[in-house]
Length: 181
Image 1 (cartoon, rainbow, N blue to C red):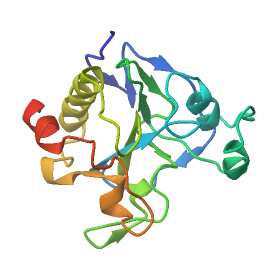
Image 2 (image 1 turned 45 degrees about the horizontal axis):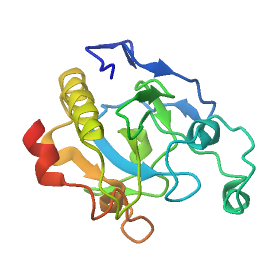
Image 3 (image 1 turned 120 degrees about the horizontal axis):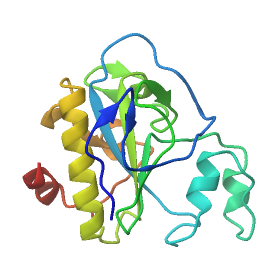
Image 4 (image 1 turned 90 degrees about the horizontal axis):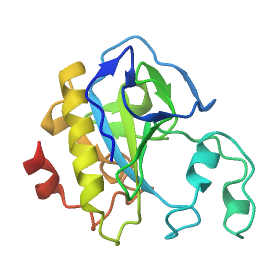
């Protein structure tokens, strides 16, 4: 498993980059929040390339669920597969479309100041050791490059959109993750 060692101009080194068109210019201001999500397409199915295709706006076929998300334009800065492989879709300097309607400590529109990391998974399925190692490495690099991201500014999607979202869910081991930092 390749892990990054640095961030250069908004991009991790040593990871796959697949450009998403689902982003825009981040408003001026400090990058100060890390939001952890989960995703699997179709739900609870792992190891396919549907997430990569979804984040890059390609048509998804082969499962009834895809009709529900056909018109969505969603992306994330990073996606960590169950193997620990990291894929970057959007520069950290740009605004990826991952949080949607959201609120953190009185500030709306978290996409404006947040970095989004998607873990291949589901709320109630344990994440892999490889994912925790990759996420911890990425988080350390992000905190070094963007010092306003502190431990108390690392949250789940469920924390900034509690009426809409439940991820990364009960299977995400927050104490384990924070101990790795």
